[in-house]
Length: 307
Length: 295
Image 1 (cartoon, each protein chain N blue to C red):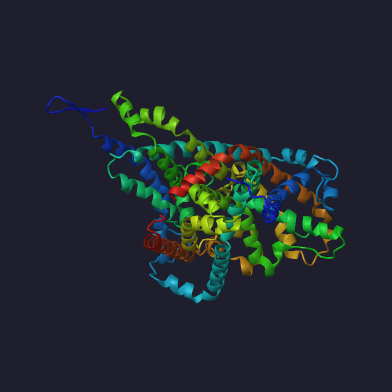
Image 2 (image 1 turned 90 degrees about the horizontal axis):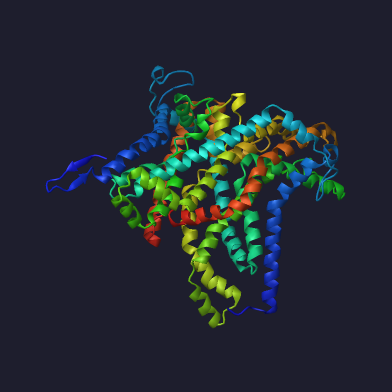
């Protein structure tokens, strides 16, 4: 360590804050390289670049790409319909996790509670590829359910994976199956944080179990739910790529193509880089704007920021 | 608190237990099903299984392990999980340690620059082009390097480190310990609980990750287990789904071995998580609770 002789003969070191800052620079460069450099790729959206060419070999086309997107709007509208429908279904059913957490909290045996919690969170830790195999094993033509129907003499094959009519509900069901137990944990933590004196007081006042839940537990979960709701709303353009990529098939394509999949389709399958980049860029900008709006709202209403 | 022994209370208890049991079965049964399917005699299993395996046959497993791609993919997946997690733990925790120091210059700007990465996403194609430009295409390093400093983990680690008593660090400084010594000898051991949590998250994330493999790695020797499973699924399923309504279910007998192969590979992919998961569950829970404080 560098030491500087001070005026009064006191040994002074190089300012600690400076040293810590210098040590963080390699990490900042790293983060810059992997998270910020890709943003420069957005520049390609304003050119007529095509894969294989160099950026300098392609022409600046200004905002033409948005005209092109506008011309293809029929497809984009369908994609946005799917995206928003899936987000809306998921947001509308998000109280399920709250209900599950409350029910779990009502279980008296702590061993059983732990068992339920462990098993219901397991699906959160497998990849969508594995979810696909499991869904295939259960709900495809020669899956478990079809075979069960056959052995029971019911003349009906179930193929939910290729059924366009139930595609939205099916995808919602899979996502809920995967995340319900995990989403409940945060509410279980919030319930544990509710002042136990409130429960004692309610008990003294003669409140029954249902009244206690409705008047103490549920209000105690409002703020957590509100924050997560705002985050979900600001995230509504991102349904995630993996689920829809894995479950995509021509039979259900009409219902299953969401924005994240569409960005992939235009970019990788159609090879139209500028259009894919422009769509991804617009999506990120809108999402960030939504997040800031949600944050402002949260500050105004609850006095807590969520970011 | 006095227990509620009223009849309606007891009925409610029973209903809750019943509901939770059903939910539990819904979560566990698919895993159970693929396991019994994978150890049954394939031709019997294809006729339908519900609760018990039909016969006992490990030929599919033996066959799979003889295939060239499976053991290699297992090795790649294990390597990326271990190396990627180690790198993430070291880099993210050291960075979190640096920004915990209140005297650090530009501290909040430095911290913010990393946290913002959680919300801005350049998109698929810009990411693809950047990684390619860095020479990470068909490169094992693609699996482990990009996630080394992860915003979410930094938040978890920093939140934990901030509540450690500052005096410990001050007294270590008086004893002449430097920046790295304090981190390695003091902060790292004290942060073990949250490091375990981050380590477990990172391990699961690494094990389940496949999109990087799909978009950028075509080299057969570098395929991960998830990707191999995907390739097996892809070969038959798409076709089956497309033609599903047209084909009589009984004529699909030729795909029997395909199905049992899929089931066996899936079991191999899921097994490590199923074994490790119950032991590590408390670390997951701790993480989500800490994340709730500052998410």
